Amino acid sequence: MKRNVSLEEISDGKLYTSNDMVKADCGDCAGCSACCHGMGESIVLDPLDIYRLTTNLEMSFEALLTQYIELNVVDGVILPNLKMAGPEEACGFLNEKGRCSIHSHRPGICRLFPLGRFYEDGDFKYFLQTNECKKENRTKVKVKKWIDTPNLKQYEEFVNDWHNFLLNMQERAADSDETSAKQISMFILQNFYMKPYDRSKEFYPQYEERRSGAKLIFHV
Ligand code: SF4
Ligand code: SF4
Image 1 (tube, rainbow, N blue to C red):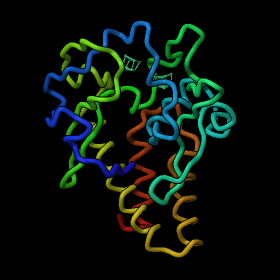
Image 2 (image 1 turned 45 degrees about the horizontal axis):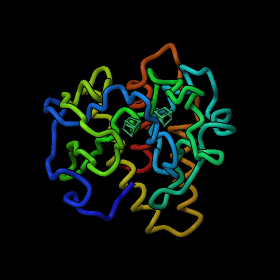
Image 3 (image 1 turned 120 degrees about the horizontal axis):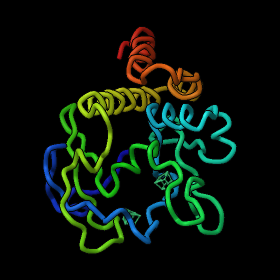
Image 4 (image 1 turned 90 degrees about the horizontal axis):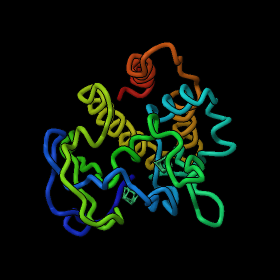
């Protein structure tokens, strides 16, 4: 999701790699679930998030849509995001103790928070959002430990590829008439989100296969 703010406004002004230490560790979020409430449509899900959710919860994308996720337009294309529901605008995966009930397979944005990604020149670095996490006295932690994601190099390549692909498709949708823009959205939804992933196989080869299909059609 594009944000029209300067890095200086929302961060400590530094950019981090996965090997850097950053003051993000909020002590296991003990007693706090602030960023699992009131996040609007901002926790946008990527194909790996949907692989994790559908395979670990053994729910189809359509079943997730009935309770936990919703569809919204992000910069011109339709993408899924975590749904904030009820008077407390809470994520449906938050349990009665105020803890994440899907911690081991929580989405990438939840793993990252309060870090964000800053994309530049076809690559990205991490930044620390200084106004987001409510916990004071956060301690330093290595970025890669904080993200808690196996095969980090492969993951970062995927994140970058998905970002660049989406950017291209969003620009295409913006330059298209309504019918073509809808077709672009439906292709992304069906090819990367709705078509079931095989839980007995790793995510990345399945993603690569789907990306190759997209390359053949859209040459990107
Ligand atoms: S998935 Fe878990 S960490 Fe992410 S917003 Fe929902 S409850 Fe919070
Ligand atoms: S606001 Fe900070 S401490 Fe609170 S749940 Fe989110 S990351 Fe954890």
